[in-house]
Image (cartoon, rainbow, N blue to C red; front, side):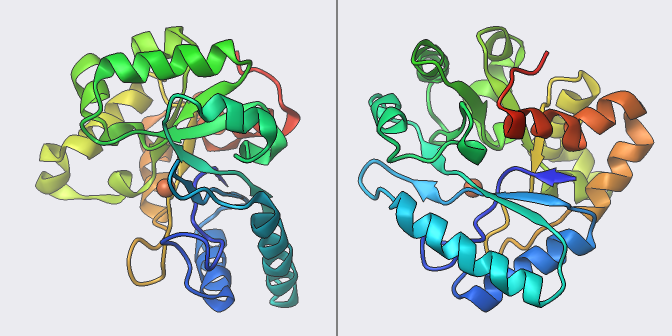
Length: 240
Ligand SMILES: [Fe+2]
């Protein structure tokens, strides 16, 4: 699987606390079947990240994982909490796109209005970028309105693996789990991400999600959502 959403860069946001934790997160992710990970530190308008620092730290992490014999491809990006002028910062290179492509990972406040979500998609598209909505299951605006319209306006959808690992009656009643399962059954998800932060809080949860996908999705779509679509990010081409 290609994990397009993670907080594995240490000392940048509320993710990994040191390089050892970065390596542990990556080890756990790869043991569960992940081959590629995009590091997406939070970017807030009031707390911008420094792209140079992110790139330097990723180099250190790459060295550390290869020393440990962990096979994985690592890339950089940002997870941006949407703000109106974000496209200017994409253009100036202050915000890192996913793998240096035109794809940009965007989140909202959980209760953000659907109107703002739609405005975001239009703004980002008009500026020549491809918006990917991070953990789409979390937003009330999308729970209420569904995904068809945002997708038709040019948004791509990242769903989280963790809700797919929830089990039993609890999962059947759980809003996020139901949302992710339905989106995948309707083929509305384009990418998966763990959104892993730390080894004790929000570790990567992948294995159960892969089992669910194998049981419930047709193999051709499963391949796309697991990794085929994410390869289009690396190639920087549109997904059809
Ligand atoms: Fe995140």
